[in-house]
Picture 1 (cartoon, rainbow, N blue to C red):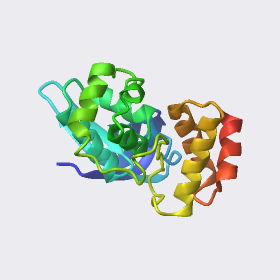
Picture 2 (cartoon, rainbow, N blue to C red):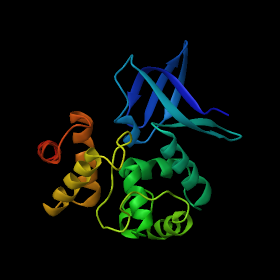
Picture 3 (cartoon, one colour):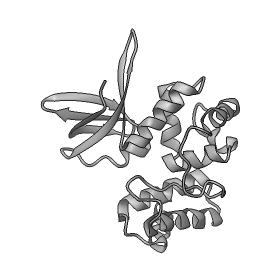
Picture 4 (cartoon, helix red, strand yellow):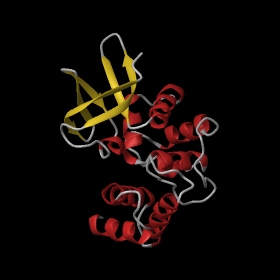
Length: 206
């Protein structure tokens, strides 16, 4: 069983990364929320792997941390109607913490917006996973806790991120659009960015 692969980035697209590990190129399928955190060509990166072996194909799915990999395994193995392709769509549209929040609140409407996820499938996701996923720090609110991996949830940086998402929603952004915009701003500015800086950067790129 492959747990992780560490190597130099040979090439990357929004849904696929090829890592060069001692002269062997591993083609790894990734969600957009992982690919946006992949370093440049020639840089080293470690991806946590969920392998899928079938009679007619073998595939590797990679994630920036173990929690996201484990969630992918959970959703594709426990929820009827969700295979690896739809699982990637789900994790490409929404950040991991935002998915946790949506499941905890049984937000069927938000989950159903993901490609390949209809209302019935979204309902199954909520029913099957509500008691199986770890909850974000404030799962009882309607504001997504889309905190990027690497930012502890009890730090000022995490609060700045959530405040920025809430501010964009107040300005009329949809939840998933606000999460994506602030996530992009956070990647560009780094973990020291204040809420005001995140908001300004998100508005420029939105």
